Structure formats: structure tokens, C-alpha cells
Length: 80
Image (cartoon, rainbow, N blue to C red; front, side):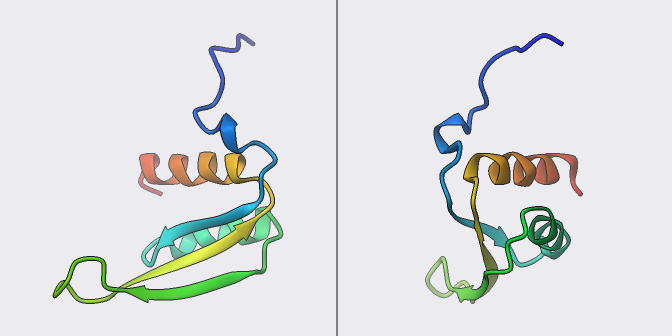
């Protein structure tokens, strides 16, 4: 297998931290919680644009941000 290059998320290899998902990405959140064994989740309601109403988000604590960003990006690109 040929390696084409480094991941755009290689800066986050082996770094732990929070990943934020949109409220409608509940299915991806559940898969990430199980795959990364990350039970620490926060539910947030934030008004991003003044007067735009509050939107729901989830924050998930993971041990490897690089891998979490890759999974999240693939879920979003594939429309899953």
C-alpha cells in the first residue's frame, strides 16, 4: 500500500481533548463514544449568531484528537 502523505490532522496525533459535534450528528457521537471508549460527553445549547436561536452541540472527550477528527470528517463527507 502506498502512503500518499500525512494526515491533515497529524498535528493532533496522540493529543487528548474535546471534539465538538452538531446536535444532529447523534449517530456519529454514539459510534465515537463506543469506538474511543469515551463516556465523557457534554450537551451544549449555544446561540452562535445573535438572534439566530440556540443550537444543540455535543462535546466528546477523546484520547487521540487526530483519529477522532478523521472519523468525524469521514462521517460528514459521506453524509452518514
